[in-house]
Image (cartoon, rainbow, N blue to C red; front, top):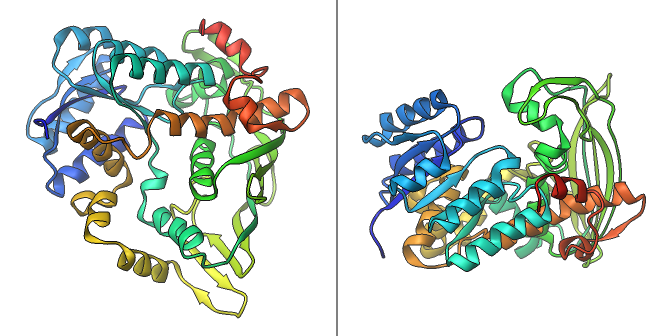
Length: 400
């Protein structure tokens, strides 16, 4: 193993707080495989705040930088944890990779398939690791649910699932973290690709390859958003409503429904059905089994999430337990960061590399492409770039 990895945090708003809590949880468990040496953000006050936060639990003060270029020129870091808005992922990642740093990129990997492939290509030509920061699959509950459904086959052979989230929760476009999320050119698409990226990763992680996607989506909320990054003012143009059918090569069908512009009663539900019973997701439906799951079997037996967790943990060898929950850490952001830095130190592949991030991304894009074309699309045609009608104007805007 090499020495301690010098890690830079790039992007110090929004999701970076969860990453910082992950660093803290790892260090509290005894992990000393990395040190956060830099915080980088175009808004200096955010970088200063993040550095102070990290110094409080790390015991050493990260340096502060206002740009990726400045960070690279200082030659203080081996790797970067990228927590910028979606539109900046590919630019930051490629510049860092070309400078010889390894990168962990928040989901979704790139703003489009082309952007994602450009990041992966930069990693390959520089022989550096590209990892995707996807925390949901690392949660103890999620790992246990995957084991119960796919290894133990607790509810038999999977047949179909119904996933629904309907409410009247409009995004607050007055805040910096949501202004860019309302504009397709900056976010790449709405919640199908934002929170939906977690769902897209987990269903493929659990159930295998997707065959075909059929999507119908709507935009009801077209409010004008003021002070949008790069664009100035612009009307919201991302989807806020959809109905999607995902068909897997195994034959499994998932019906995925969402709306955040629906006055009246709300729905939040995810049910997975098999030949021997069902499993209910106990948390937010798009964060598959992050909140755990209870199984109801055909013979009337109920298997609680607590029982599933206990059985799953008992099934793991000491080596598996240390790999999946390093240092005994159960913080899913901490686990994804450890997986990244440990893969650099040991030379092994990360649990979720760039290609895994691309496959997750491709399912989200297949939904957008289907809705744009008005017909079902083959997942593989979106993954390989044959179909990119929805993505084309985004690629052109970013010169991809």
